[in-house]
Image (cartoon, rainbow, N blue to C red; front, side):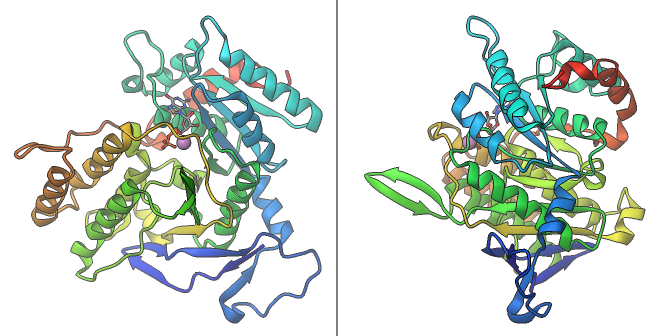
Length: 395
Ligand code: GDP
Ligand code: CO
């Protein structure tokens, strides 16, 4: 594929935060002439390079009661060499949707001779393995992992680790375009191939997110993402003294990390998970607060934001959670030790203006799970591996 070279990189401590890079073309041919490196600001990412990273990557797909056709479509779009890991919280009573998901996945895997993993979020063995690892705070009183996409992400991440993968990417199950899924993964690999540090992250920005209101409208920014990005940028600028607009992917559900980075980040619950990843990176590696990972600080963190060619069309679940999402994102920024008094005041004013908080109220604290590296990840792996076959689709 062809992608814009990362022309502008903002440095914040040891973080290299790259401005958005557009995908120029989805394919760059097997033999076509390479433009001289960096010519016209375009980079060619070879097919072999793409395959190299795909082979080392797990794609985690969190699912909760999505239409089977959508899940099938998403899985069919994941490049063959990636390990698919479905973490489902779908209903099991009356209609066993989880079973249907497993069957659909099994058929697809048999046809295409590939392996995949599938686990239910409420599987007692998963709850036990999370508890063994030290993630008691993610368990409910019933000993099972609590609801939530971010909890599913963490299970998927640990399973990817157990499977020996070096990269982990997340893709929602409610995507209407398998071709978009294929592109997300290619964009992940493009980012990783450009990273200088083993600690790297790629976040996807859709070129458009179409809305249907009368006709089809190709909308670029959502209400939540605009506000989240603004305050994430403010969090940086109030510390550096230079205004910036570098962050454009604060809420990116579609994102990927090297396992090395994924292991050292804490994970917030609910809608806060994606912005919290950035906030945590700013806190630990921004050079303002003392780092908990001095060795990582030496190598730096590479963050890429890649703008897709495909539009993003997902299942519309209504606007009710817009306010909830915004509050979650603002809470992570507000409660960050990087957030000064003035920025706190502005965030409170924003939330009052949006009708989310009343005067005098503060955003709630968000639960943040310990980084995988800090818990006993081997215990999780051992517990899971005792019965690892059970999670294989083609057993
Ligand atoms: P939005 O796209 O931000 O509006 O969020 P969605 O409601 O589409 O959720 C994103 C993805 O997470 C979808 O694939 C959902 O099916 C999935 N999801 C949501 N909640 C849960 C959960 O509690 N557990 C799991 N495993 N997946 C979830
Ligand atoms: Co969605």
